[in-house]
Image 1 (tube, rainbow over the protein chains, first blue to last red):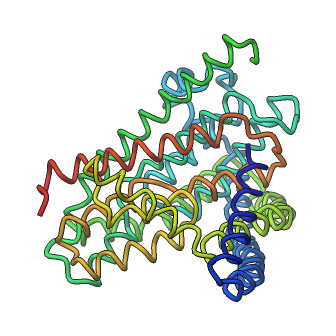
Image 2 (cartoon, chains in turn orange, cyan):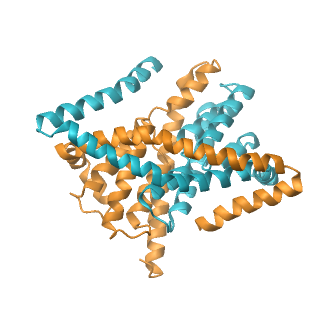
Image 3 (cartoon, each protein chain N blue to C red):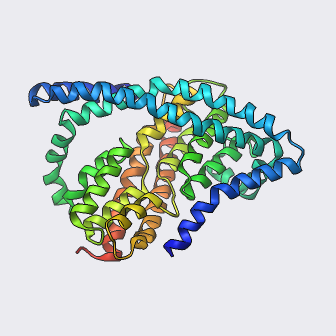
Amino acid sequence: MVNYIWVGMTVIGIVFGMINGTMDQVNEALFVSAKEAVTLCLGLMSILVFWLGLMKIAEESGLLDKLSNLFRPFMRWLFPEVPPNHPAMGYILSNMMANTFGLGNAATPLGIKAMEQLKKLNGGKATVSRSMVTFLAINTSSVTLIPTTVIAIRMNYDAHSPTDIVFPTIIATAISAVGGIAIDRYFYYRRKRNGRE
Amino acid sequence: MLHWMTTISIWMIPLLILTILLYGTLKKVPTYETFVEGGKEGISMSFSLIPFLVGMLVAISVFRASGALDFIVQLLNPLLALLHFPAEVLPLAIIRPISGTAALGMTSDLISVYGPDSFVGRLAATIQGSTDTTFYVLTVYFGAVGIKKMGDALKVGLLADLIGIVAAVVVVTLVFGMK
């Protein structure tokens, strides 16, 4: 799936550039974006080092476990394949919380840690597990309480009340989270029926 | 309301750090050593991310720079008009799961052109705030830990985005009306 999408976007882009006469832009895009990707990774490094260091303290001190105890029933329902006391639960929860409160740069390292733990649970295989799909479904629907960036943009353009989109945003994001979980469950049972899981 | 919310966001991270450090000290964790040990992982992780992100970002930007994305948006326009989906927001809806920065640019563009208190402006803001860059999340999370077979993850993520966008249209219409 990823392979097709990846090749598809690039090939369509290049062919389109030929027809459309946008080869110049395509050439520029190639090199500029490659450079941007590396810069992005280096930018991520500072955040990753800082938050992974801090979270290690939270993990060792047992703070992370405390957090997961709080939401245990809900998490067990969401991730039936993860043992309730597994460190993955703590990371998944703290990632969800960071997302909810709009702490995007804290959320990424936590999410990666959660993935790492889920991979361990899956025997270290390079294939996706059921819990990983669920985790991503929740993550990409990004339940946010305070969409700070958007509020800032609206303020810039002198919105009458910059925060009046907060309520619709919360509703929309909640619907997409519930929808994401439902779709995830549907695909899981479909895989199960077809004997793939 | 805004003042109160910005204060909370500004205080949240320092307070979180404070809690983690104090709790760790209380539980007699060798805090500094543990921090360094945990932080080390971040270095290798960000290096291993480079090929994943380079690959994805190059494909996305070629697709966009060639004009192929605009073309597809134009093709879809009549179909969406039938479904009463506001055409102005369509490029944003398509780009949102693919590129976070491009989406942010489009959102501010829509807000500046149509005005922050217009239907389009509010809808753009809601879509931007309520969905995430699925491709980026997938690339980074799976890339960092070396998952190569994504299975249903991409499909599920994109469908969740679709639901989010449709929900945004419906909610914004219900709350503010179509003006």
